[in-house]
Length: 180
Image (cartoon, rainbow, N blue to C red):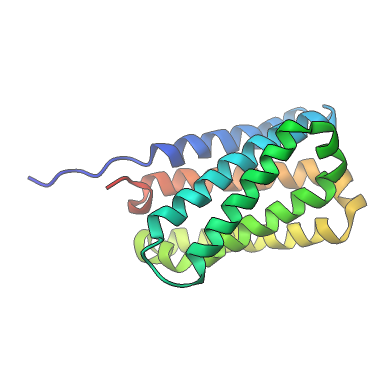
């Protein structure tokens, strides 16, 4: 009898958390920017840890993708810790730091999409491709227009966090999200 692989619990938990954070952004738009900084700090740390875990899982493969995941993961964890430890300073640099995190995370996800396609299929591949291209566009828009970032960051961030959460939940059910 074949032994069944484990379920992607970490991906599922991350997806639920990211969707909750995205919904929180829409429900509480009047909260102080420092509250948002804290929420995004948590999200950045979680996503960074997942990028590092992805690197560990695919390090046996050569190429650019796994190294980008490691670098993105380290930058995400560092950015998240900065936001969590210094929320006042984080509020001031959020207009620069948050777009950089968006861009770094999207590049890391795009770099390992060929592996996702092999393991999880075309549907998840195309969803990840579209989601991360949208994230790159939003990241560069926010980076190039800081005032734009301050006025609409919660909406872009909320939408993107929900999309990332959906991506993580889908990955939890795919063969790639399962523990062997």
